Length: 259
Ligand code: NAP
Image (cartoon, rainbow, N blue to C red; front, side):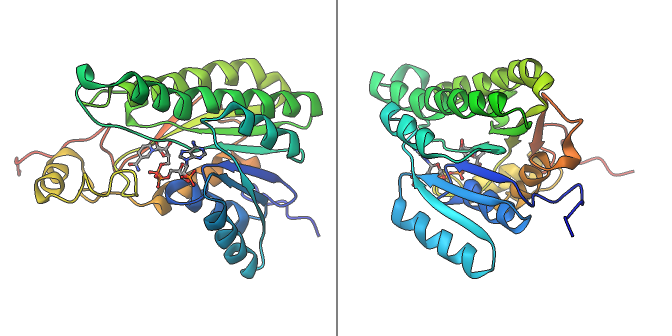
């Protein structure tokens, strides 16, 4: 009997760009568990294969694909090999934190290419086929709190993540008539390899306690369920949104007042 649950991804094929660890890996695991065939793509192919084997050992369906979003030839080669894609999770990203005036041209170009230009190229190639195929689809862009607000020393990263949020809104408008929903997730402070060292000092964790209602830092597993929902039939009327998964950071504060 076909699975008609609004949360089921049964029969769908998903590409997770940036799936070797962190948020992308959590999304890949949960997407497979929801019933999709998942293509885990990134540069670390051995790690990807290990993760694919682990997913398959649980009885789910997955494969690995080499993809470097900082390399146009790699993006084109991966896109040419892809089967028809129903769900595209754009997760690959990198960051350098420093004063705006200290960024080198090399750092600027690398962050721009990885977080923005490469993702744009991949989305163009995958999205074109999604439109031509005429069976709808889902695109989930992993933005950031820096898509919607500013913190010091994150200028180039914030430029890329703000642009992804802009792209999300326009593609949502442009492709709605093809039944393709395009949404953005803005993860808050999620401990991964990207920022583990930055969160080590006690004063960083202390700061978080006053900055958001839920004082803990998040995990990739906090983000993945929303990504799965946004790729499921149940989210068919959610389009062009940026949804924060941030323990309330973007909307709440705590204060010392007690009634
Ligand atoms: P992570 O653990 O460092 O994972 C980054 C992922 O991106 C890895 O799978 C990596 O795979 C892939 N990647 C990096 N450069 C790539 C390239 N050139 N080509 C293909 N894949 C590439 O970091 P994360 O925290 O999970 O970050 C995932 C996404 O969430 C990023 O876009 C990040 O900006 C965003 N985000 C994270 C946080 C947070 O607090 N952690 C908050 C907001 C947004 P390979 O190295 O194997 O290629």
